[in-house]
Length: 410
Image 1 (cartoon, one colour):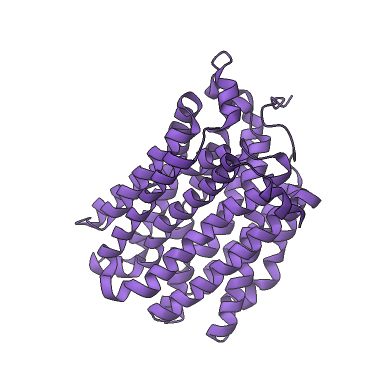
Image 2 (image 1 turned 180 degrees about the vertical axis):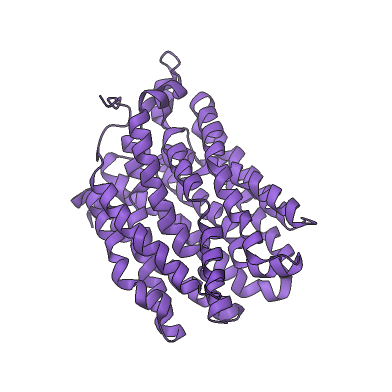
């Protein structure tokens, strides 16, 4: 009830900033995960093996840190709101263009550019929200923003379930234009971050210098986000392929299980975000990540689709439960002079390190006779333990004023 009362007490600019962060990440993820469901169909269309097509996922992830750096730097100079509009338009158009690719190399190039644009969205949207809302609501709003990722996956699952058999993979990418409508919402309803406006009146600061000054913290967070990205992409990206190629499920059953697993992810994010305000960011991450371990047998090895769906629900509740704290945690740890750039950059650098996950898992599965269950299990089992241990060793600044300077490590 306390969270609901706090939310009702928000001003209109505060609520719209939170919703903009959520919707931006939702539609970003929707465009990304459209491809995940269509890897098999694209490989057949271009007469390429699935591992070669999965390079598109690698290139998207690998380009994201460069987008986070460039667009984040621009957001420090020109504001969070206008750059959020730019990146949403860019990744929407590039997603739609994916369906026009005449060859696999063309598709890989387009998805690389898509990843560059996508890389700018999360850091800018999260900083805009976190700098606008009251400190007591950072945990719940962090969970809301992060739940946008599985919501986007859920929407992609529904689109695949409803339209793929009728449209085919090329026309499906035209659905990627839908996020462009969010630009009108941001343009009309979302205000600029008050923290950015207050700092804009001071002498101009150099975000790259702030990043260099806090390099030890940045390095810690890159390792943390590497573990986080293995945790999410290692359980999500090839799960539809596992259902199709190893379990031999058709479009509708694959789509239905993906819908169930993303409902679990949303539940996990919504529960653990507010919980982190009570028990702390690090403790909530550790608990959620370790909860994934006992779910593995049900998630990857269950004997029927009903139990497999239950395992998928519980696995993603744990994964996105851990992720729920990331927007708040990274923004609280970031230097104020580089907040639009720092969280997104370290997040996406972690993505870069983990970006070989899909080809790695696909190759590991193929070497074992398309045993995707083994490849999925190997990654999530190791990652959950590493994530819990590394998180417990790091700092936490829950509730810190976001216009205060973070002291550089000795």
